[in-house]
Image 1: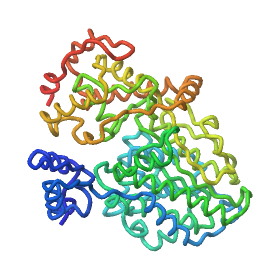
Image 2: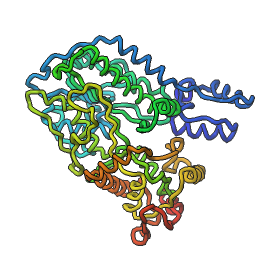
Image 3: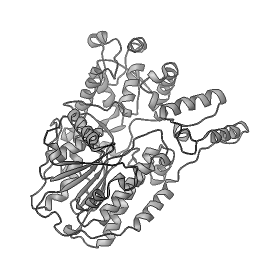
Image 4: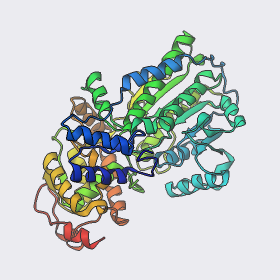
Length: 519
C-alpha cells in the first residue's frame, strides 16, 4: 500500500519528508510522497540509490504528452451544431460546479440575484440530497446572499467530480442536454498531491463536461475557472512548461483542463465553419490570481496561501520583499464572481428576455466589470477565449496595506533571508506555525515582474480599482485579526506606538513571545 492509501496527507508527508532528511539525509518532496506509487518498497529503493551515490530523481510528469493524449480523446467526441434561438422564451439554465466553495457560493449568489436566469443546477458532493442542500444553504448564509426562496430556482444534484459521469443519476445526466451555460468551478485543491492523484476530479471531470458541451444542441457558453501558476507575459511557452513540470499536481491539472477547454472551442469552430453568432458557442477560460474578501465584509478563506503567508510574516516580525516593480494578481471574491457571471450570461443577450447587463454584486463595495476589463479578443463573436484576470496591485503596496491596517512594522528581508528565518521558526514551532502547510511553496517571489505590469498599474490607477483592491486587503486584515488568525504582537502597544513607513522598514518588536503566549 502507498503512503496515501494508508491515510497519509500533506501534513503527514511534511513530517515524513523531514524525518527522511534527518535520519537518512534523503531529500524528498511532499508531492513525491503523495504519489500512488510511493510505497515502503519505493522508499527503500530511493534510499538504496541515495546510499550508493546514485542521483535520486522522482518521476516527472510530461504535461505536454498528457495534454496531447486528452486532446486526441476530445477529437473523437461527436459535435452537434447548436439550434438557432435555443433559449426560446425562457431565461438560461446554468450548471455550476464547486458551488459550496469560497468563490463558488458567490458565483451562485450572483446567478440567483440575476432574474434573467431561469434555473441554476449545482453539483454537490454529499451522501444525500438533504445534506447537499444544507451545505449550499450554510455557505450562502456565510457569504451573505441566502434567501428562503433560493431553492425555487436553485436545483441541487448530488454528485462527485471524481466519479464517472460526475456521479450523477441517469436521468440527471440526460437532463444536461437542457443546460445553456456551464460554469466549471469545482476542483480538488491539494497543493501537496501529484497530478495522478488529482487527475480524476480535476481533469476527467472537465473532459466529461466538455463532452456534454460539444454534443449539446442547446449549450451556448462553457466557462472553466482555472487556477494555479500563471504564465508571465514575458515568459516563453517552453519556460512555462518547465515551471509546470517542476510544480505541484494542482497547477498541472488546471493547465491541462484549461488547454482542453480551449481545444474544445477550436474543434467547435472547425465544425461550424461560420461566424454566424446564432450558431456560435463560447469556450472560455477565466484565470484569476489570489482571491480575497471584499472591502465590505472582508470574509477571508484561512486555507489560502496568501493569508497563511501573511499570518506567518506577522508572527515572524518580517516579510519577504519582491523587487519594487513586481505586481500581485489579487482580486475581491465578489468582483471575480461578478466578472464570471457577466461573461457567462453575455451570450444570453440574444434571448427574448433582452440584454444582460453586468449584475450587481452581493456587496456593492467594488466596481462592476465593464467592457474595459476585457482583452481585445473578448467579444460576443469570439468563441475561444483565455481571460487572464489581472486585477491587483504592486507587491510593495500589498505589504504596506497589511502593516498599515494592523498598525505594526515588519522588517523587510529578501526572500532567501526570510525563508532562512522561516525555516528556523518552523523547526521550533512545527505545526503551530502558520507557514507549516505551505513551507515547500515559499519563494522565490510573491508577485511577477514584467513590463506589462506598468500598463496594468496605469489602467487600475485611472479607474480607481487600485484603491478598491487595497481597501479589500485592509478589510481582510481587520477580519483576520478579529478572528485571531493573524495574531498581532504586543497588540496593546502597537495600536498606539507603531509607525509604518512607505517601504515597510523600521524598528519592530519581536513577535515570538506574544505569539507563544497566544497559543
